[in-house]
Image (tube, rainbow over all chains, first blue to last red; front, side, top):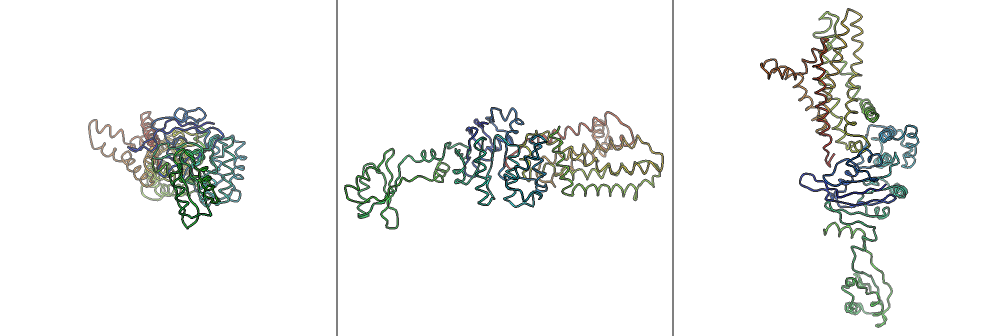
Length: 310
Length: 241
């Protein structure tokens, strides 16, 4: 099911928490939703899940508007809120049954679905406990189980792996990927490595505005218009090499890497490439080129650029 | 309708899971029983086969008892954030409110059902006016429904249970006592309006065994006004809850 967010705006008093954001998520796609604290991520999630109504704009899920038919939309959404609220005094099984009934799972299937969720989320040993008696990681699993119990077409997860141990994180990521093959998944997270590992596409918002939308690779490229390479040149004097490199026409900046190594970081002028020129220079001077690697910018840096400079 | 019942079931179970249901029923029966049978203007003192003394004490016990039942219904869910889970499920705000209203109402019905032995015992010792007793119970139910709606409303405007409890009592005391007192001592149309607004006048006429469509209309309008207020307050959600 396709989720299309169309120009949604939400203000709290005079402050615009979300300012005309639009993006699309297709079925079979996992989108990572990123942004610094207070950027409007949670507000956007709360609007998509019909918890709050936007001041302007609309969200369509499978072509159905959240404003016109919220109840129809809600049937297709599985939602794990950021704070993972749960009825602490309820036994876990009763809670899953309650959610399944509310979601309209047919009576005959409820048992099977609960059993399946207990398997998938690794809750087998805690079956008969009250939710309040479970550790935080297990509570997180219960939150995931309730989000998926009705086999929703759209899954919205706000920080799904918080509080889980490393093994469980890997399992849950695998699970999200598996679900993402057929379903639409929107994943909010602060952990960039997680987003990069699980998501097909990344949407970044800052101060309520959309600042980037694309795959991790395209985002890196967008943010990096200048070529940067790291080279190591041996059999020559460090300072001499440095001066020679600075004189190459296409090179804008040469950085000596610290610790008296023979390595340099070279940034070319915009839209120009200097790798060939560096090689030729070494041949001319009789130096040995032992390393030449393009430097890719980390997603963290891209994220910082997009959210601090804007 | 099915969705409402699912919510009601969960809410009722949580009353009894948290012991609150048991405590409230025991307290209610304790107070009512003590003042009906043992102390004060009790049945033996009146020396008539009627439940009048029970109805007048239940009138006051329920007044305090109901806000304690309703205070957490919405306030607690807002505080713990579970309201977000409930609202994002395929149910409307009205279904949530109706489910919670019904749960509180059923809890009161259960408590009142435990007082039926009073009726049976009194009926076995003397000639009782059966109509008056049933009308009295009906009056209690109408009154309870009114206070539940008011309690639900105050629970929807705050996420603090104690605040919800106190505001419910504050609003309740006007209907329960103040309108009647002030209305009784003032004359003209102001007094008339105040006397009409007083819940005790309507309740007492029912407890005497008289049913009037005016009284029923009075209770129903309190219930609907309070529930509409609840819906308005509940549908205004902000980021923190």
